[in-house]
Length: 152
Ligand code: FES
Image (tube, rainbow, N blue to C red; front, side, top):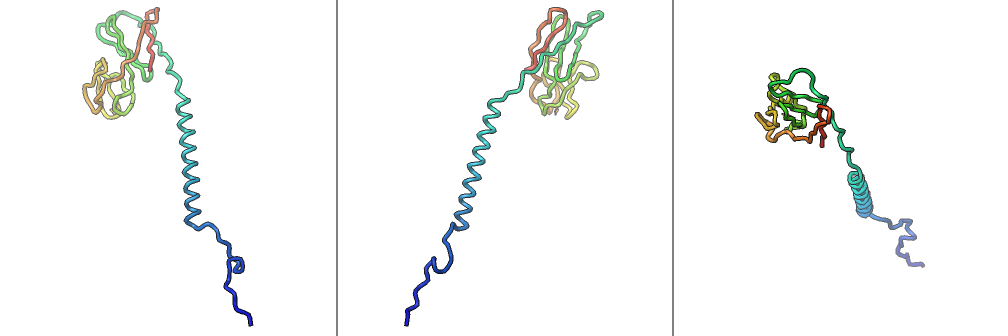
């Protein structure tokens, strides 16, 4: 009579493989490595790319008799304020959340249509919610009676 032998893995037909926990760990590490790779590529792309500098904005000479009070001229997000011989330029981007401000009805303030901020013509805050002045921009005469503003 033969003694029954104890079954071995080879005789039972089962093969020892990775457990679910091991598979989950491997998958997690692979996804983590892929995420790091993508983050590295994304940061490299942002570091390598910078937006082109904004184009200068030209304001032609004024026509007609000289004005007594200040005059606000606007081209998109650029404001040019002229008062007598003086001229200065401001960004029209509201310092609150970035809406475009425009001259108020009397031409003596710069008003934001979004949440009601109001600025003086020098860019200072007269009324919130904005709590920072408008950004001053570089301006220079164009040599022909007009001005060139250099945003950014
Ligand atoms: S964006 Fe101008 S007041 Fe809010």
